[in-house]
Image (cartoon, rainbow, N blue to C red; front, side):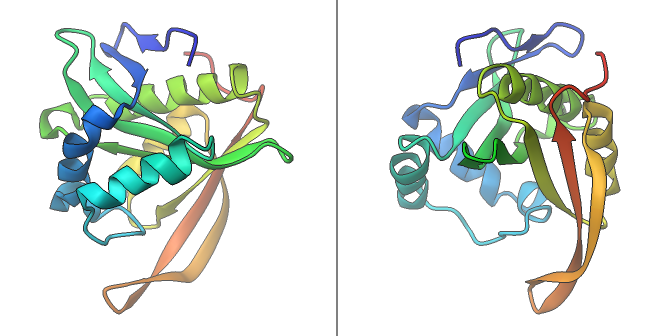
Length: 180
């Protein structure tokens, strides 16, 4: 990440995740407020996250950043791309806002916009896609504001706690982002 990815209006910036962020990420991902919105809802461990760093981040399959508050550099959450496919110019997007006081004030939308800019400018990706649980309307609205478009609706696509759930498939294409 060579560029500066900051949103003065919302008061955040992105920085690359480091191994020192492991305990924070594990704690955030294991909180009920974050976990309930993920397709993969298993509890995280320090060892599992360290393995993620070694097998995914260090190999270039993942770029993971920390969303930080401009005032005091406090970490608020994480935004990342995974399964980076350089041949086809695409990757899957993911985000979580770990700090409760950072939710509902535009941090997620701003972080998504910044990460899309990074994906298209630095990674030279053509397409960034995501999957979101169909009932998560707040996230869907945020993704749309950042430039993602609904592409599909997958009925009973995942099974969480014995219940089949629907998924909304969304994507953003290079050059088709709204001005912010």
